[in-house]
Length: 299
Image (cartoon, rainbow, N blue to C red; front, top):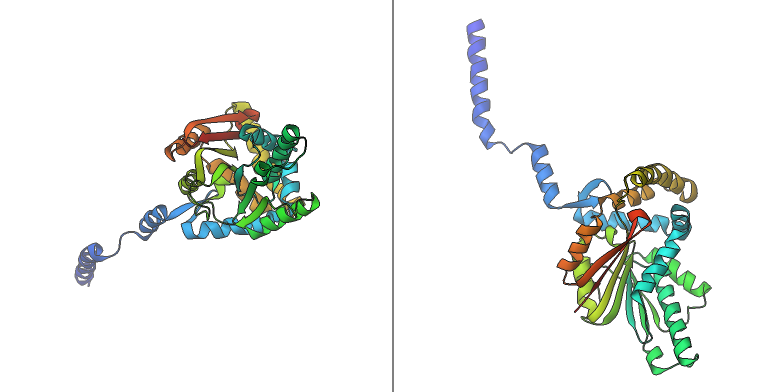
């Protein structure tokens, strides 16, 4: 009996050894390799590329109504100063064709418009000129809920009848604008949410005129060790809890914090901008490196 059992066991072992080469590779290894080649990050999670835009869309649909309030709370109002600095570096001018991407709430576009009106008033004593009539600012956002918030803000500011302000639902990776049609391109706190940053940068380069300026305002990596520790505690403990308390949505703000950490550091992102074709690429750290303004010129 023992001899027969041993022979049977040996036979089964030989069969298994024979079958192994014809079986598929380890499923976990295969899945990981497949996911790696067709995946992107959604915060700290790896998801399929086709899923990311849907998931990000869900996040911003969820936070749209409280987005401005949460920005004020999370940054202690500093985001307003950061955006003012962005506009200062852009230096808008009358007659400008400007594209603000991922700017659904209108925060940046309104600043551009106000700066142009201020310049026009000082230069022309308030007289409308043909140059000023040529001014056009396009707000492009993939999320219709964010655009609705912006349109509401425009109405509150008395801008709803401004013919120079257009609201466009569109994808940063596949813009509907013609080649060389814009004098300026801005994107504030939005580029880290696109699926392919390289494609968004390539599109920015494509739609700008020669001499056109690209400016990106983005939460970035902290370069001060002690401040980094404080910032990490604030980001991962306070912000999601604040999101739950104020917006009733902890998950979305957890993603926003994680997406900042997954974004390339200042030097790497500047290199990516340069690789897209831009010249004179530079960045400016604000508040210990938490926020950086990157800029480039299309020559």
